[in-house]
Image (cartoon, rainbow, N blue to C red):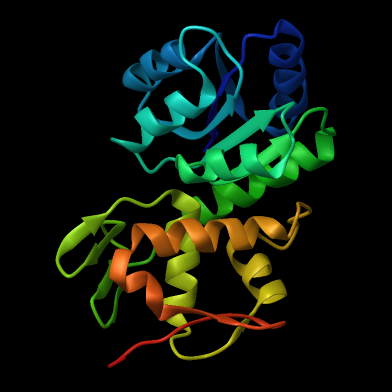
Length: 225
């Protein structure tokens, strides 16, 4: 089945480039000139499997569009921007983005990120995981903390699921990146730390269960604290 990708950007050069990169890979690429237009497209095309958002756009920027999408959908979101420093990456991930790619980028790197996000989105399994006050239901993609829902991005959900599947075990950083981001992940490994910080905050008191294992990785501690 052909995957549909929505790309929002106000730069005609990049609209053409992304279409040129992705269509030969078999994807259908829908386009929007800003975040507001992207939301309108999503309302008409529920089959969109991945959203790519530029940050700096008129009418509605990528950060605002990302937050709006997260209010009703867990569709994977990849942010593209020329603002390639850590504070902007953190802001995007905090807003619900699953991955971040700086302009300019190569065809291979963009395609690798897209494949990894779509692969994880397809790997849905009926599964209920519980650790203390945190419960994860993979069938509905819902996470609750003491019964109250926590709104997570696609990538945060997958990260939490991996840690909870390996509850109380130490999960090495490279293994987490391999399993959650994909075998072909070629981005900055700091993105894992950024996602963990955001996940801890969204889990409120349950965030204390994600423990840093110095120089190794992370662990989700179940049971009594």
